[in-house]
Length: 323
Image (cartoon, rainbow, N blue to C red; front, side):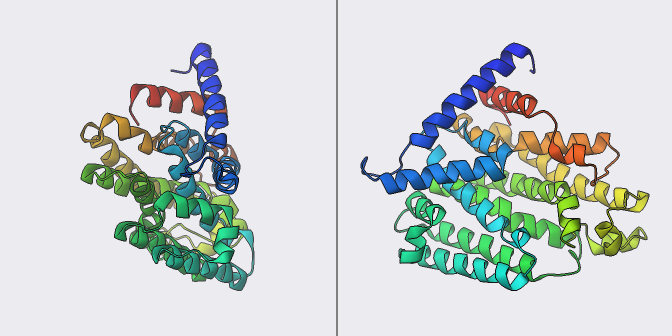
């Protein structure tokens, strides 16, 4: 799967698709330069802040990719707020602005401020002037989960809370992308639920070092206490046996959801499997973490290895219509 020829073909394909999506417009008017610029901003934002998801989204069809990029840029934008400042009040103010935006979008409105924000503008085009009830719930769920996370201190209480946060953010983002693209399929919704949990939990594990520097912890307090470790020890980035054991527990939870999502692959219509290509980088990280004995503070694991290899694996799975 990672032969030089495949890597070269994958690289060429990604560059070609990137150029295509960067110039695509989802507007009913081909003259709407502002909207095209908003979608280009979403593509650039995903590429800069969530490169692996960007690679996966490039393999969606030209029909689906712009809306999916808008949703994924919205998720990236709201996810990065808490970590972008040490002042919780500032983070909460920015997230409150986004809550006002999604409430306006849910009512079919678009404030002057929202129209000026490229992600908000693209998201409005993606979900439509009259978004579905499902889309309204999902947008608000994502923002509310981010707000609750910005308010919390002292770490996540238990695995259930961790799983709920992953579901409210990443599962909701996957479901919102499906809805924005007009996909109405119960099996796809179930896969999105499981895979979103796997993606979200894995992302939190992967960000352990960055979180520790911000004095944030997503390893469950209950599990840490049971193993004789503390939240404070995670801030010191101690690679103790206790913390590795907790990381193992959390990684196993993510892996169980990943396996459940993949077990349903045959029930997902072949043209829609590209929505779930994020299973590929998620699986790759979990395998690498296991190989390093679940040391979540190992920067080499967090970086994800050679991008060209991952790019080839994503391209190969996209070609085979698997995830």
